[in-house]
Length: 361
Length: 164
Image (cartoon, rainbow over all chains, first blue to last red; front, side, top):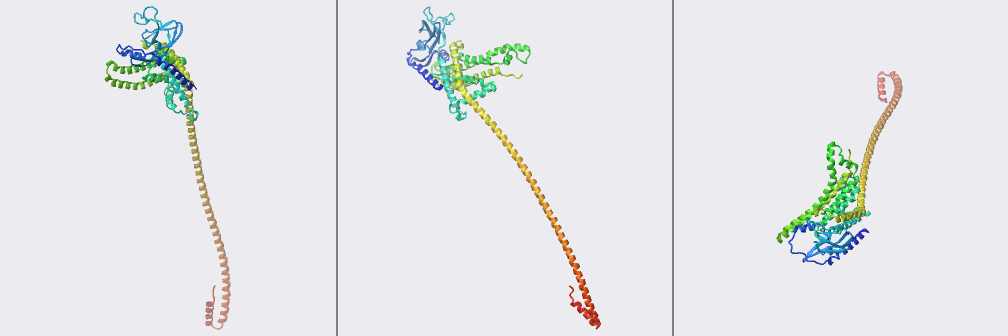
C-alpha cells in the first residue's frame, strides 16, 4: 500500500521537476576566464539551488529546484530557474514586493540603495539582509531521493518475509538482511547490550542506511546523484545532534555520576576530571560530526582534484593517469563510505550504550 | 569558513527528513523485519533447546536400556546358575537314588542268594543224608557178601551218583 503510494509519489515528483529541464533557457557561460579548480571543487562540494547536470555546447543544463523563503512578507516560493543560472547577484526576482538576488548560492534581499544589488563591508563580506532560506536545494533534493530509495528498498525487504517461508527472507531480503543483522549483532548488541539494544535498533538502522546510501549516492558521478550531502556539515551536525540528544535523554544516574564525580579516585582528581568529562559530552558528538563531514568531503575533493589535473596541465595525455588514479581513489572511497557509515553508527551506539550502562560497583 | 558553517535550511530539511524516515522505516520496515528476525532466532533457539533436550532424553533412554540390559544379563546368569545347580542336584539325587536302589537290589539279591543257598544246602544235606543212608544200606548189604565187592560197589555207586 505504502509502496504504491511512494511509487506514485516519486513518479509525480519526478515528472513535476523533470518537465522543467526543457524549460530552462540556455545561457552562454563565461568562457573568457581560466578554469578555476578551487572554485569548481568548492562549488561541487557545497550546496546549490539548482542541480547542474552538464554543460553542453557552452550552455549549462541544470535541473531547477524550488526556492522556499520565509521573508518579512511571509512565505515566498519560486523555481531557481528564474535566476537564469546567475550566481553573482545580477538577476533580480521580484515576489511579494520584495527583490531577491542569488549570490554564491545564497539568497539575499537586493540592496535598495546604490547601483549594485550586493553591498559589501570593508572585509568584502556581504552585508545584505537575508530571508530565512529553507529551499529544496541540490542536497535536500538528493536527500529526498535517498529517502525514497531507502523506503522502497526496506519496505520491499519487509515484504519478503512471509509466514510461508518461516521467517526466511527471499529475493532482496537475502541481500539486505545480512546488513541489518550486522548492525544488530556487531553494533547494537555489543555496544548497548543484550538487555536494551532493541529499543535503539530502529534508530541505528535508519542512521546507518541513511548515511551509507547518501555516501554512495555522492560517489555516483551523474544526475541525480553526485551531491555531497554527507560531506555537508549541516547534515552531519543534525545526525550528531540526534545522537547527542538521545544520549543525554536516556542517560542514567551512573552516567552523570561518572562525569561529575568519578567514583574510585581521590577528590582532587575528581575535581580535575569533572570539567574534562563535562566537555567530553559535547566533544563526542562534535567528533562524530567532523569525522563524517571531513572524510566524505575529502573523498570528493581528491577525486575532483585528480580529474582536474587534466585541466590544470591542459593536456589530454595526462588523462589516463588522472583517470586511473581517480578510479583507484573512487574504489577506495566505496570502502571508506561504508566504513564511515559504520563508524558513525557504531560510535553512536557506543555513546548511547555508555549512557545507559549499569555499573557493578 | 563557508564550508564549516551549517546552513539553516539544510539543518531543517535533514531533521525533517530523518524524522520522517525514522518513523516510516520503523513502522513499515524495521518492525516487520526485526520481528521476523527475532521470531526466527527465537524459534532456532527453541529448536536447539528441544534438540538438546531430545539428546538428553536419548542419553537417558540409552542409559535406561543399558541398565535393563545389564539387569537382564544378571538375571540370565543367575537363572543359568540356578539351572545348573538344579541340574547337578538332580543328577546327584538321581545318582544317590540309583545307588541306593542298586544297593537295595544287591542286598535283596544277596538275601535271596543266601536263602537259596541255605535252602540248597539243606536240600544237599538231606540228599547227602539220603545218599549216605542209601550207601550205607547198600554197603551194609554188600559187605555182608564180599568186602572187595562191597568197596567196588561203593565206588560204583559214588561214580553213578550225581552230586548235584
